[in-house]
Image (cartoon, chains in turn cyan, yellow):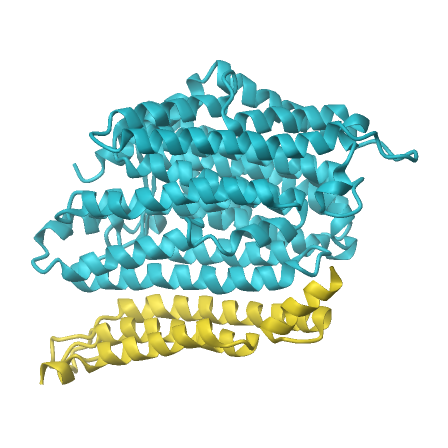
Amino acid sequence: MLSHLPILQVVVPMLMAPLVLLIQPARLAWALTLATSALAFAIAINLVQLTTSDGPMLYPIGGWEAPYGIELQVDGLSALFLLIVSGASTFVLLAGYQSLISEIKESKLNWFFGAWLLALAGLLGIVVSGDAFNIFVFMEIASLASYVLIAGGPNRQALPAVFKYLIMGTIGATFYLIGIGLIYIMTGTLNMSDIATKLPSVVDQTPILVAAGFISIGLALKAAIFPMHAWLPNTYCFAPNMVTAFLAACSTKIAIYVLLRVDFTLFQSNLIGHLIQFKIFLIPLACMAILAGAYMAMRDTLAKKIFAWSSVGQVGYIILGAALVSHSGLTSALLHSFNHALAKGTIFIGIGLLALQAKSGELSSFAGLGRRHPLAAIAITIAGLSLVGIPGTAGFLSKWLLIQAVFEQPNGVIALLAIVLVSSLMSVVYLARFLETLFFPPAPAGSEPTLPLGATAILVMLALSSIYFGLAPALPMELATQAADTLLGYGK
Amino acid sequence: MIVLDLFHYWTFIALLMMGFYTVIVKNNLVKRLLGLSLFQSAVFLLFIGIAKVEGGTTPIFTNLVDSQVFSNPLPQVLILTAIVVGISTSALGLAIILRIKEAYGTIEEDEIQSREEEAQ
């Protein structure tokens, strides 16, 4: 039974998706979706334990051995991302019922939850698959389902935004497909570890180099790495609040996961001079992302868009850590993926709950809501502090590790440090602007209903876990270290 | 001659660029979606093209066929999946365009933007 967990991780949400469609009372459909997502979370926790104790798991689908059959591969790297994706989905669903009901027509909710489960299955599928083409298919399942989720809300501005996302996302995925095609032409195989063994014997490296270019650009589009982030701010801003919380926590990170996985398995050890190209390509982009994201977040006046821009910047931190290609750099990148998913998820859930009372998405309509709902607002504050990287929160650790990794670099230390410090100060500014609006103006008049109690409790718990993982970081730290070991171990 | 030998790669690149150009330049959302379809189809052609083996036959084992050279069936199977993905993308894109038409009364990118600015 335990050996089948890798496939169950994908199959459970995927099979439940059409089932949820048939269930009419919205509350029941929600409960079933939540139960499925929780089950996926439980499977992910099990897989994390198994990979930590027994090492990587390989699962040939249908008993067809690799390289002929499709092989699933769960190792230290995948385990971390499985945990992030399934955890994000579960907690957002748990806290999000009232918010979803308020934004999506009740008669359409079962369709919405079907799409949610498909998105979940796709994202999990990307992570467990060890087959390059299979990853493409799961990527498209996840993307198509998330377009539906984003366009499902009442806000008409979501529609042009999601169309842009669809165009850019499809171009990204197609670029990835071209890259895989070129690799297939040169090696005749699609299984990632098999490609890795065959690449060294490829005589003409030019097509592989072109493939690396296509794959990196395509995945950078999907990961919203600056300047390929154009789809992200509007998409996150106008999507239903809980969809933003779910996608902001995990969707760009999964693209980063694929980028790292493919790059470290296939290219780092097999392409001459790839290390330098990888660094020269990504480090400047990451630095620009960090600064541009924080700068735009300071200027924007829509509550969700502020934090959407902040996501562009935070993706920059993750990429910067990864692009240093050192053990500490990768650990910081992976740890930051976890911490950022936790903090950003919490913030967007919090905004979603407060938005139940706000008239519009403008910052001004959140004025004084923090006084009326102190618990939710304090939870957002804590998560925001973790985003800035205040000592004692989880975000501090990953930034600290990043700074350590920067110090290990032979050159450019001062410039990179300056960028990290300046952008942290900038993030204090945009966070302060948001919190000022929440707490300082007088509470809005009128007797408004209180926030849903259960959802607030989940929100507070998530915020507290940001502090918990800041003070006792053993678990995410171990996972991130294990994942970094796995990445550096590929191709050796 | 070497250029002509590689003609199927040239076709791929030409179609890819035509599709890409349409996606970037056109203002009309349906045209952009068509460009996207063309862009994807070009990649399908790349895969189908590489499956052809000179003198190869259908990859079915029988005693009737003398030739031992077979075309590679795998890329075709992959592209079957990719075509399904492409069609789903187009269908979803068209559905979104329909909703945009309902919400804004237009499917021209610049008009959508100006209507959004008017509303604010």
